[in-house]
Amino acid sequence: MMHPAAIASVGLALAGLAACGAADEAGAPDENFAPDYRGAEVRMLDAELIQVLVAMKGARGIADVEDHARCVAAGQAQARGQGFLRHLRTNVARRAGLWQGDAIYTMSAALPRGLRTIDAAVTVRDCRKQGIPTI
Image (cartoon, rainbow, N blue to C red):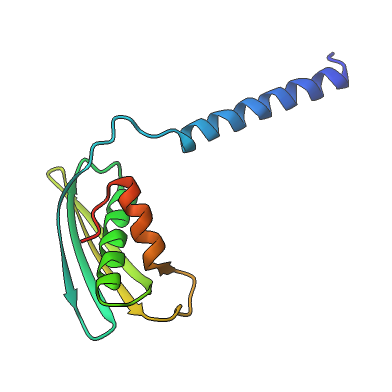
């Protein structure tokens, strides 16, 4: 039988290793990630409501397509003098290696109510740093 102090030491060591592995996975850039952004279209549904259609190849999953749509929406909001967005929904589909996103956002000059709000200026800056098109 192991001594309780030894069990505690092993447990702490394993917890530390698990935390390091998670940090490496989350924090390390994916060197093989080479997205091919295939364009975007923005449709004004009314004065404050926009639809963003995006296409890309090389996405790692749904989140990459959502990021692309959010970046385009933020760029569109800034181009129209609006500082904020609220995400309503995004539909993503993949056909023959082409990822397509269809997202809806509201735009406003002031911070909208809700949990899924986006600061357009901050988002555009972050998108540019990541190489994601904003228009």
